[in-house]
Length: 504
Ligand SMILES: Cc1cc2nc3c(=O)[nH]c(=O)nc-3n(C[C@H](O)[C@H](O)[C@H](O)COP(=O)(O)OP(=O)(O)OC[C@H]3O[C@@H](n4cnc5c(N)ncnc54)[C@H](O)[C@@H]3O)c2cc1C
Ligand SMILES: Cc1cc2nc3c(=O)[nH]c(=O)nc-3n(C[C@H](O)[C@H](O)[C@H](O)COP(=O)(O)O)c2cc1C
Image (cartoon, rainbow, N blue to C red):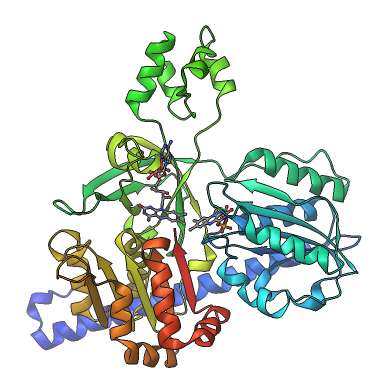
């Protein structure tokens, strides 16, 4: 054994550098192996899907945050297990020539009635009137949320285009409001009719795992804005994720609401466990309708609470999922369901229902590609996971543009960002603290101010990743990008998968 203190400083430096290089080489080897295994698994899955007899089915999906892709994969699997050969394809890779025979489309709507970003090339190049779709028989599963003004707008316009150009519907469009299980069962029923296999088990979303709330820390004491919390959850066994993925949380009701219902109905205290994850009635008549029923009978009449989604801000190597959660008040001032659960009501050490949702459309670009990361507020979460991964990969060409209200109170993860800047992981940093000067300054202004550099980075092959508020940031960032790079330039970046958004 060599005593390091016996070595000269130069020898120690060389030894350390050798160690770092060795670890890095091992890491690169492991990454290459993982990538090869992943490609083989994808190839094997595609081969397995395409086996079977009878007329093949194309399952095409357009997804912004991963749910449509998850459902398309489940659809393809169900068809394949029933013996039908399937091709599963992102809508961006579907051409006019593919639109014959049988096709199922699983598409979401984003923004204000917009198509998901990856669907843009299909809309521009394929979705033209005058197409001959007379040889196509199709079904559409449209995902949406009826709290938006343009419910399922993209699914509806795709369906209308398919019908207008001669496609024959196999069945009426199925619309899914906020993941409604009944609508998903209806879709599954249509798949069963297509295949003739009607006794397949019901699909279900992946079950929540028992995570633990390990840490909760206020990131912005004294801020003029809403509270933002660093929330750390340690995983259930076997959880894995990568930068860009999303954590779905199964929230619980505020304890005071549960206690009030227990008191109103004279239920045993033990009813709290069951009631905490159900949608509770608030109207007096709806509460009265439950009087005299057992807890089990009440549970049968109430539906489960919806999940909430949060961009993951850490890597598995950090030992847990870290989030940046803004406490959202409801109209009456009480905390929102998901953010209230994570930021207020759940206790450190308590179990949290959660599951990882893969969000391939926000996964990392190749390490050698320069990366421009743009976000404000809680949007730093998704960007932070990417910066962590880039630091591990030795991918140093990174430009972070981050905006919040004040440098004094809202510089989330400041030490870490300064550390990355000092070590060269962040090659360029532009901060926009909107309230620190008389006129408001936001990240889109920083983009304008750095127009030449932005054009240069894009010319060098950079990808642009945007994370955070749709209304408050990404729409204005998009407009700034169009002004600096031109509409065609932004379109090209989208087609090439170099402009990605995790916005909400
Ligand atoms: C892909 C994705 C990633 C996301 N990542 C993050 C993230 O990293 N960090 C983050 O903080 N958030 C993130 N979000 C947002 C997050 O999922 C939640 O929407 C957010 O936390 C608010 O949910 P909530 O349940 O706390 O509030 P809710 O209870 O849903 O209330 C939110 C708002 O809805 C209105 N509202 C809802 N219910 C009522 C009611 N009964 N009465 C009156 N008004 C009502 C209110 O105006 C309120 O402000 C993300 C969302 C998506 C889709
Ligand atoms: C930022 C944002 C905007 C949305 N806009 C709409 C909309 O305009 N109309 C609609 O019906 N649903 C809208 N939704 C709901 C999504 O379509 C729904 O959550 C869907 O399940 C997402 O599927 P995906 O993960 O495959 O993109 C929106 C969701 C988000 C996060």
